[in-house]
Length: 217
Image (cartoon, rainbow, N blue to C red; front, top):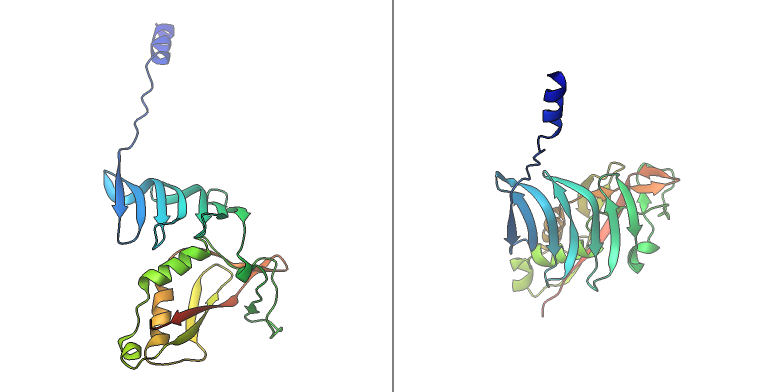
């Protein structure tokens, strides 16, 4: 009797129930992804992010709302620049652009007051061109600057700490007419993860600077 029950159990088919998903195309944010039908706030499946000119910038996979496995980032020339494994928290491939490759950074809370080369510069896990694309989409020409015919370049500095968190957005040499505030606002809208900079193979707090150009056509 016991043997018969055991055999019956062994031959019961195992049912694997997949979760139904729904594809979302968000034209406002230039994203394409899947969500659970049972919970549309939870991404589950393939994700793609496109630039303001419809270039693929990021593709990856969500599992129950969490980034999973290897994600890939591309530049405006369709070249692969970054592969990051969210499961193992490892950089699989990284090709910085020429502006970033030999860039020096100011290490905060360091005895060395000059800019330094690092073992690894801070890496944005969306790619450099993602940042440029988001600035192009979100930045608005200030009315005050437009009405007065003003243009210029704003250098926004901010801190990326040893945990990859950003803070202390500021402009050291403001040019006025609302351009400094708008540049900071546009950069703060960029959400995503940073890998911290490494000096002597240890994570450090650094200050990074992004230039934003306001030009009247």
